[in-house]
Image (cartoon, rainbow, N blue to C red; front, side, top):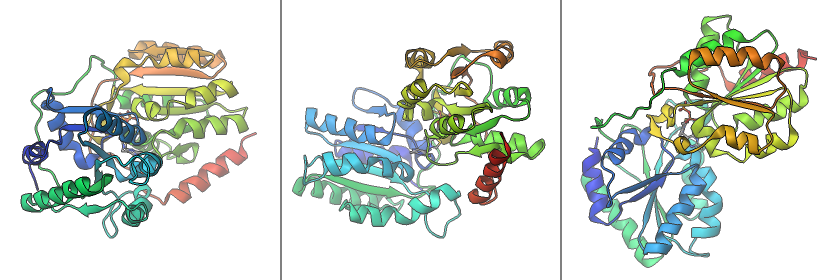
Length: 378
Ligand SMILES: Cc1ncc(C[n+]2csc(CCOP(=O)(O)OP(=O)(O)O)c2C)c(N)n1
C-alpha cells in the first residue's frame, strides 16, 4: 500500500494540485489527507456529481492552463461520458484532465451486485471512449512511471487520461482534525423512529449507501418485511425519482423516500419534477449529516443548502427541517393529515457505522417481492 502523503508528493511535483470529484471508499484515506492539508496550493472542490466535476476541472484548465485531477468511483464514470466526449475530447475542445477512478466490481473479486456491470465494462468503455488509461500498482516507481506517461500524453495530445485504482491501494490516514457537525440524532435513530411510526401500507424507497443498509438491518431484525422496501443500492441520487413515479401510480398509498444530502444534491433537479406533478401521497425525507458518510464522511455542500427553501420554491405543499427526536415525533404525528409532496429534512450527526449488513439476496428477487406487494395494493 502507498501512503497518501507520498502519493500527493508525486502529484505536487508535477503541479497537479487541483482536485475535484465525488468520493469513493477506495480513496477514503486520500480524501482525508486532502481535507487535512487544504491550502492555497492544494484545492479540493467536492462536486455535486461526476459530470459537474469534469466541467469544474475543464474551467480550471481554461482559466489557468493547468491540469485538474478528477476523482470518482467507476459507478460515476458513466455520468461523465457526456462531458468527456462533447467537451474534453481531443476532437472537441481537447481539455487535459487526469481522471482517478476507483475500480469497484473488478471481475473475480467479491463486491456488491450494483458494481458488477460497470466493474466488467469499465476498461472496454475507456477503450471505446479512446481514453488512455493505466491500472496502477501500489508501488512508487510504477506510479511515477504512469504519471510521466500521462504527462507526455497531455503534452502531445491534450485530452482526458485515466489512472485506475484498486481497493486497498492507500495506507490508512488518521485525520488531524476530525470531521463533525453540531447535530445529535443518528441516522439509525431517525430510521427507527420513522419506520416505527408507519402504519401498514406505506411504500418505502431508500437511497444508496448506509441509509438503505440501516433500513435493511431494521427490517431484518423486525418482521423481515423487505418486500415493503425498494433498496436503491446503486444509481445514487435516483431514489426520489423512483419514489415519485411509484407515488403517481399508487395514489392511495403513501410513498416514503429516504434520501441522503449527497444523493439529493447529486440529482437536485428532481425537486422541480416533484413540484410539477405534485403527488399528494409523496413524503421526501432527507437525512442530512452534511457528509457522504457511506464513503468515509467527506463533506457534501449541504451546509450551504436550505433544502426546505428549494422544496418551497419548487411547489412542495409542506416542508420542515428538524433537529431533535421530539421535533421529529411531532412532525410525524402532524403529517398524517397533511397533503404532499412533503419534505422533512432531518439534521443528523456524523456517526459512521462499519460492518453494516447489505441486502444479501439477488436484487431481482427483492424487486419481484416488492412488485408483488405493490400489485396487491389498491
Ligand atoms: C454515481 C455515484 N457516485 C459515487 C458513488 C459512491 N457513493 C456511494 S454512497 C455515497 C455517499 C452518499 O452520501 P449521502 O447521500 O449524503 O448519504 P450518506 O452516505 O451520508 O448516508 C457515495 C459517494 C455512487 N454509488 N454512485
